[in-house]
Length: 342
Length: 82
Image (cartoon, rainbow over all chains, first blue to last red):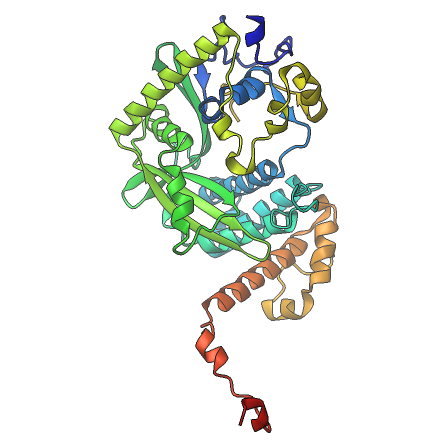
């Protein structure tokens, strides 16, 4: 079996899951799946092995990830503040915030303050093609995107927050539930909202793609079929006992000189979700086979997806020298754990 | 920056806000930003959105109308081959 080893590097020891249970069972096969880990396995078993089993991550943190985290956090902050104003207790606040416009302005300011603090020191990454920093996802454009988002949707959003029994808006919700065959699905939902008489998951995205006008269909059509959206649909329905109609993609196109917003729906039928679960079981069986064989094959057809896989250079080398190249640009970091709530 | 009143009328902000000021605010330690500082940033970005929306809504000159512009002044008929 020596020749079947995917990599010469051993698994890191010991794994620290920050006090949360490991998502791997005693035989080393993952049993708790979220959209990230499941998506990796579907995309390329080798990439799954590198990132989820061996915990390799690029030394340079993705600015797209950071930008998205700041954006999500500020919107969540705003939504929760707007929804919870009735719980504020001092007379001064109640008087001031009976005016919804004033409440909105205050919540916007608080959310912007949070984003300014969170993003302090953030700089966009270097564009490999030009050798220069990216000019779209800058700190200023983050703040601009948030202010414009709150202007567009703050007081006139047709999506109304779904209020949980604790009085809080349903935003940034972690879930996990059993799906049989000793497996769990886990994840995090941005929001559950009312749209008309129906409930939907609302998922915020930032992108450089066009999200308005006729060209928007190219962006939104990418979400059906889509691993993440199927998992969110079933997650909201099962974990929160909330039958949802599907997911609303709430997209922000962040360009150098403007931010544009577009929304679209992606629906899943019961039959589609059943098929999705069958797929999860099948991929779990595959993961079991790969684990037992100690060999995680590459999916060479995925190497060019999304501008090129970050491990492409490593995988292009001979297996005997791969570790050296891996250690140059990547480090083994804290394991990804779908069971860790946010 | 903290001596700017919290409730600055918008028409005053039109004169006060400028890119240099915004740059200064973005370069400040965010923990030291006052409500008034944040109001200035938000007002400026809201103004930028209005400008963007106005520009996007403005009817664009068609290629035909651009080509149909007739130059003013004397025309040298020789340039037209006449």
